[in-house]
Length: 378
Figure 1 (spheres, rainbow, N blue to C red):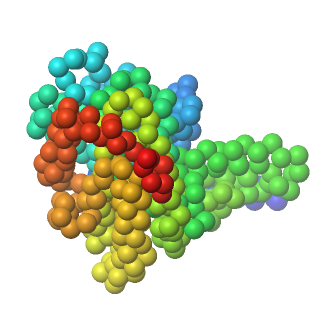
Figure 2 (spheres, rainbow, N blue to C red):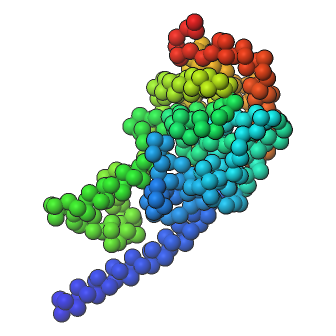
Figure 3 (cartoon, rainbow, N blue to C red):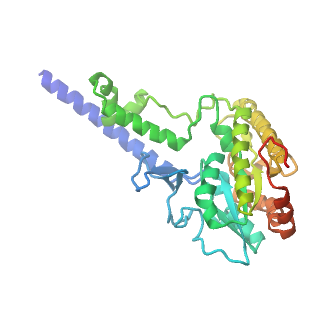
């Protein structure tokens, strides 16, 4: 009798788990197909084995030195990647009659959320500057550290004439109090936690919660059973530290500037704005708190970074300083732009890129050169 009751209980639990998994599967399919405001993402090993639970439009591969890179050979819409894993069509040999620019940064520079490659900043700049080739080496979630690594381990091989770094927000947002780990690194950590738990020699640590997570994941999620390393990327209670993040950002970007100068390439920093009021996830009553917790601190981050970089002789365009400000209607969320937003941004930046291509200005910039951030130029 007891055996039948146990079998019935197990069968009931399995039935509930299967029903919940069917519900979750539909939701995961919808999430995996998401385009805006940013592409759904999936994480893979360097050999192509998926690490993240679900697939996504933007497939990221673990890549030595750079952390992650986009999977080569993605075919859009909404996005295409070359055999090198950079957004856009294949990169041909460098032409002597075209000025080659590397566009570096995070999801805003990458163009995450756009319906096609044609709307990206790289393409929009090329349309306004026919003699300029723009290669998009940006990627979702990249910080200035990723940009620096990409320039050193991939970008230099492309022999750019100039490098344009569009970013700032990811450095500010990810380097928060108690949060130093990008989203994809959290996924790796959670996988390591699961593996370690499954191999733990102590049965009390292997079971019951490890078994529940492994064999009844849908029920486990609803019971709040989770890895000891919980996702931290969406926790708005973790307040950004603008001074600390600005210092790290300036150090990395200054290194990029010096590397570019050593290659004989021009360098331009574009610090992106934010529009906290465009965050659809929060209500009107919460927006004041969002503005205080993020926008005011991000303004300080921008001011600190802009001042330090200019003192070091680095060209900077601050898109949040009012003169080059983009209206909130051109944003899909606090930091990502609409297709029209990218067109407007290209109009703003095209004259600056044209200056980089001017041989007289390039010679003047080479004579002055960037210095160590915070140190006077010789």
